[in-house]
Image 1: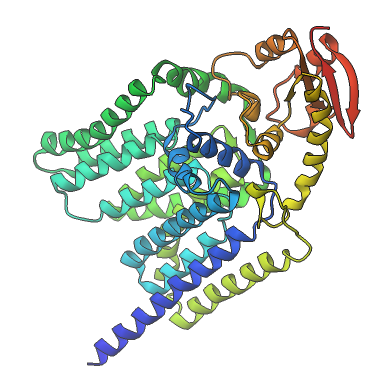
Image 2: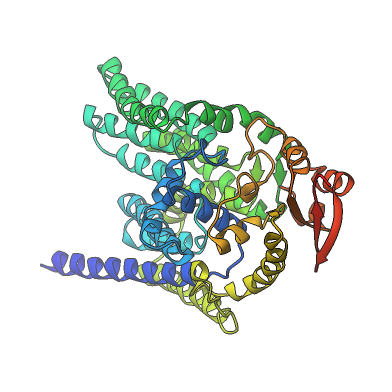
Length: 465
């Protein structure tokens, strides 16, 4: 009876912790200040799909389509950033809950809640990398069950879903999972391997049919395969502020190696799957791309801590509570003064009042539109103008390095400058605004077109005079 009472108390603590994580994530996601371009670019890609456009065929996109397709679902009902953030919250909670389940199975409810809360601190903007992370967590969780045909088939489906989240790391994941299935199967290796391949192939066939039916097969390879080589070579960067996360990964890898040396097969599974998450950090080694692997490698670190110190539950819960309280307070304290815009797509988004500057600029552009000119914005924030006007300007909504397939960015600009009745709007600090802006664009426009006006830091050029 004492055991039942203790079990009941633990269940209440666990449920309360899950609710606390959900509330924390609600605050994080919905109080996040407007202006993160990763969020706006991804929102616009999902908006394009919700508007009936087909990835690759109708607009440029170098990432795999699964993330944008999933996030387009709420936009079918409301094409607003708020609706998009509802799905972001669902994803963030799914990741934290999956981490809690994984750690709970190995280290109990208290450490699982602590890891879940720490993970929640990282989530406000969700990207396709997080979808990949979620697939890895689910695969790792399934490897904890008996080695059956059904399990390996499902793992194959999830591994291919990882590929549909991120092509480069997805290939690494498919290989890593395949090797694990082969070496984990002591009997009937071929049968278990074939079931894994069948699982991956079943989703692969569905995707192939989608590409053929949507007539985007050729463009898909151009954007998602051939362009990768130029993107990786031209876009490598390292953010040294993420060094602390790199240290967590190193410690976690060492912890796994220690466990492997002690014949812990689960540690082998964890380490091999972790390789795919580490690969996410290439070519952009920044805080966002490294965070997935860092959170994943907290799992073996928790095991090291538990073995050496075995802190009592009240200390663990106190630390977790402090993360929730201070994290929530930090998010809420930044809200005062962050007004939202009255523009429908950005309504109820803290800080979206800043789009008033973009609205003023676009109103100025209307004077040229009245004269019969097409106005094209060439800037990393061009997506904001398209969202405001409820239009799509391909490829300039996402005119970034490596995002135009194998076609050179300058070739688009050459075509634009030779078109008739077009006004090009570009900021005078274009080269300094973002490292993802293609080189030579501002120079070509300013040399081959005629400056006809300015609005703040934006310059208006007329083409083909």
